[in-house]
View 1: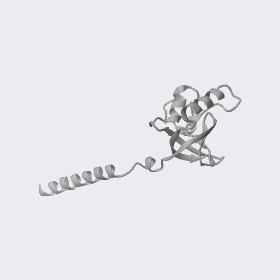
View 2: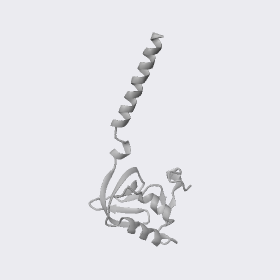
View 3: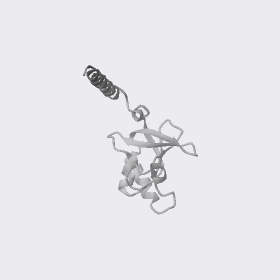
View 4: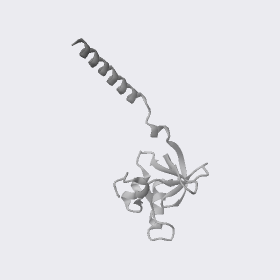
Length: 136
């Protein structure tokens, strides 16, 4: 009986330690979040922040290319949501053109990527998102 009490106490201490660690650590994604103000929207899934040379390509989103049906609507929707506004982003990757591929968030916490998909002006880019937004 004495050994089982020590075992239960050891398990209890381990659980308390695990809970403590989970409460004191910052989420890895939150640590990587950066902020800026949108200065320019290139198209329905690409924007640029002030004082930043590199463009940001929205992760998991595929909007029609310039000249394709729906491209103006997608560009306008992204401009309406973000142009001149403060946003934050979480870098997910860098594409072959050197752009930052990111999830972009408005100051109220809503994700721009998801909003464009929900508005129907862009589609989920399932090849990269792997169904993250639930539209694949």
